[in-house]
Length: 242
Image 1 (cartoon, rainbow, N blue to C red):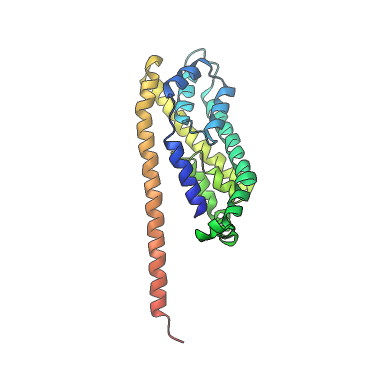
Image 2 (image 1 turned 90 degrees about the vertical axis):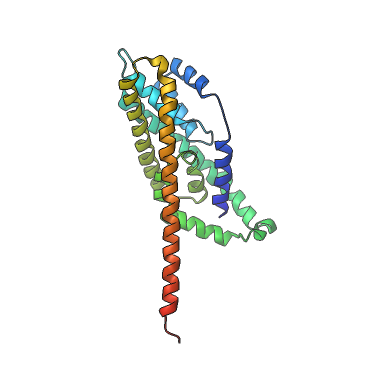
């Protein structure tokens, strides 16, 4: 529960952090290279809430123009590599710094007031080790969670190979979606001076889809928990008395 609460606080802070996306886009348009794409995506996968929607679609868009130094497949590949590097940073820092702090808090008097102890944290870690793969994959597709999902993975010391595999798969799927959006924008917006406005418009639909996916996941787990609870109650009723 403490891990959930911690991630919730970070998500709230990230969602209320604002910056000028137009200024970022203007700078990015002038400095767009594979190195810059990878660097920005590494930042996006860290704690900084930098929207990948302002990085990959414009790069894919400009890669399709004549005399471009970029290639759309390499844009998506470079973005995925950058996202993976950023996630490793979060994973490592969470394991080295976050985990000891969390355990120290759980075994403190204040932690005990919240009904926490190291044994409960260990059980939570074991659960994430067993069930965390799908959380890592889906987390890479969800707004406000994408750059945070590496934190509980690091805190629980999730197997690094498994973490890497599902991080890369999730990031690749997301960057394919963003690259496809850039391709569609290239077909729909011939004048690149209108590109940022078009990005803002279509990103609204991406966010709606992302939050819709979050809602579906929450509903799934609520229904699953309810069915499990009902099954236990039914089993207790039919169990013969000793």
